[in-house]
Length: 432
Image (tube, rainbow, N blue to C red; front, side, top):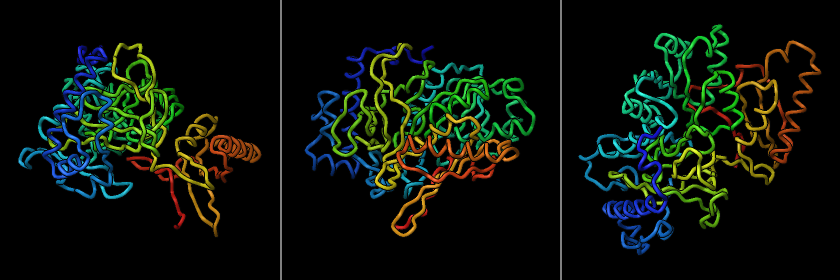
């Protein structure tokens, strides 16, 4: 049940004492980097500033822009010949951020990924098919190393080539997969086209899904089709990659590994700390990173700490699924909207397919939203009144969730763009 029982079930007082010790060491390392040597000195902060975990709030915040402006080597706390690997973010919101790792960093990261996978029930007897992109993206190699540490047989399938993915599952009796949620839904249509029943014709029992926000309804839809357990995971390249937080078998929030990170939830406007249960922006500090420690990183991800202990017995606090990102937020007619809100409503409506696209346009001084929604093919073969009824329901349900009335276009399955990586959810055609 436990990969490292002593650490996973550690008394909170002892865990926080460990965090303070590791934070002190982190600050000593960080002060060797050009960036933090200057920032910590300007803030009057050093290793002696930290007596309790709460003292982390005295330290300066770090942003993605800081990482970009001091790229590539401004955050390095070791000599370059101590580095063995680099990864980078996707760069979808601007210039990609680059993270460097020592051998010790890779070992620590691999360990928490293995801990996460083992927690869900994965064992050395499993066959693990990794259907994520390899390369600069952290998802592929992060899970690959974790699975190998457990001792499982790893199939490094990579992303795409859906028919081949299904064939690999069947030929090698895959039991565990790692896949992006939007792609696993797309894959379900390929199963149907091939006449293959994943419940009957494959042995997959566990799926790790992440890399893009998804709702509980989407998870339920995935589990209902495939018959396996789909576990939510959280990671970001600035904090290593996957394995920062992970669901246990309770599937009620993700345990954030606090022996590796200090977790804060702050008000995104005031930056003041928020208590457990209140939603805000997640701020993370690395505790074991050698090559490139990062202090109080503003993730831009919105979540909350779920109050109370978890029935699984682990004492590391749980974060709720990510509501969205502060920089993914859409503002339309003065209303703040997150794509995940739209997804949640669509997944509740019978007949809605696997994909949708939000298109924002501007006419004169007015902004307009169109939501294109794939729906089951039978709606286009029958009474058009039924199709119109579905469209009106979607409009009303979305209006109740986002407080504005979008235009809704219903389209046939497979007609919206889909990729093997993160799903394209928003196209913003507005000009500043």
